[in-house]
Amino acid sequence: MPEAAAAPAARATIGDSEFDRDTALTRRAPGVYDIDLSAGWTIINAVNGGYLLAVLGRALADALPHSDPFTISAHYLTASQPGPAVVRTEIVRTGRTLSTGQASLLQYDERGAEVERIRVLASYGDLGNLPDDVRTTARPPAMPPMDQCFGPEDGPAPVSGSSAIADRLMLKLDPSTLGWALGAPSGKGEMRAWFGLADGRDADPLSLLLAVDALPPTAFELGLSGWVPTVELTVHVRCRPAPGPVRVAISTRNLAGGFLEEDAEVWDSADRLVAQSRQLARVRLG
Image (cartoon, rainbow, N blue to C red):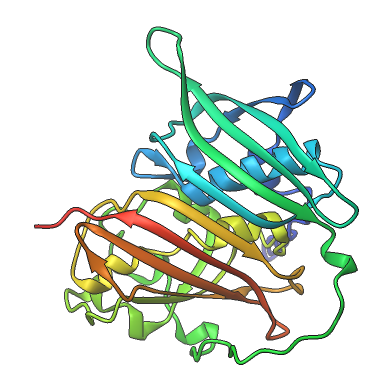
């Protein structure tokens, strides 16, 4: 008899995916949480900044009376490593529609002393209570269909600097922003891609914090290579995304003094602008 075909893998759901498990925290005391940062979200040896922001975002969602991040600003102080960490939160203010809190993620050095990795200030609310009125000049990025875009699996060999996080993402890059991978960067400082989680989990406000920092750096298309560490990242979540993959468009207009900005927009399957961000990052020149 012919061998039975393997059943297709079930899509993960929000609350039951690798992303949810790897951002889950254990409450040690009011406002204090423990987590083991997963090595599955690393870029080379450093933990991805978007994943870390989602961890802090989840802690604040538990600590504050509102559950949805509206704006969250993070300063990355030292490089985080996979392994144990503690998140400490503080409620700054609570109101009827918005609550504000701050959080710090800390790890331990070889002497057992705490080292602060990230400090965040954020305001939370209820995205479901926002009015439907939208007045905008913003337009979704002009991108080819997903089947005409390319991911790490489409290359003849792993891209230099690829890492564990690539296995956890569904990332399909716009060919017009892939010159760097072919040795011919465009010089435009642009990166665009279809984005999702590899296990099929749909996007939600917390995963949007990952999406804005998950694409290759725009510095690659400027002809630079190597690690581009984030100094500061601010994300505005505008509404809950519709099911399906999102489109992420990132651009850099100014690289000066060894620093560049990256402005990102995230659009959902209903052509809504669901998140925006700006980050300042360091680049190694020469």
